[in-house]
Length: 172
Image (cartoon, rainbow, N blue to C red; front, side, top):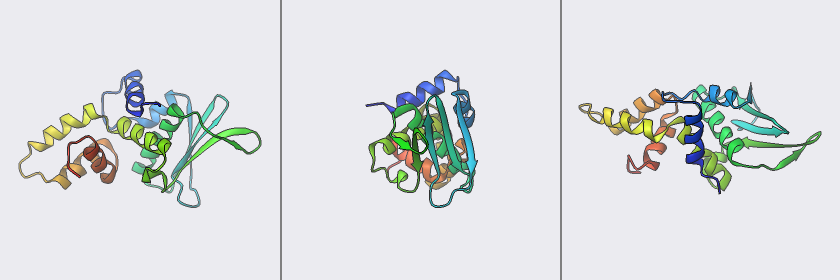
């Protein structure tokens, strides 16, 4: 079974990323992934498609820029971690749709793609020093710290809150 945390860390190391917010779109493009944006009908945030050597991430342009960043990271996780299922259109290719069900974490591949996205966008080794820095601020609340970290890493406050809980930094 692939390890999403190690895969994300490896990609960050390969591209010498030591700053935040992590430039996820630049990383994807450097990996040869084509990113396309279009407003989708329905609840889909994005998809990953493989057609031979071509890898495409489609992003719903109607979602927020932060959601788009998470979608790109999530779909990179699928492309890096999962072999895929063919979809017959004109010829065999793989497509993974990211929608509201994806975030529920009920499918093993979705759980792995979410873990990959969390680690690549909010790397533990970058989060921990920022948390320590903010924790020294007089009167900082849990919610204010989450909002500040979310801004720093250019992710939603909800994603940051889950990340801090999953890292054991905050209690659920």
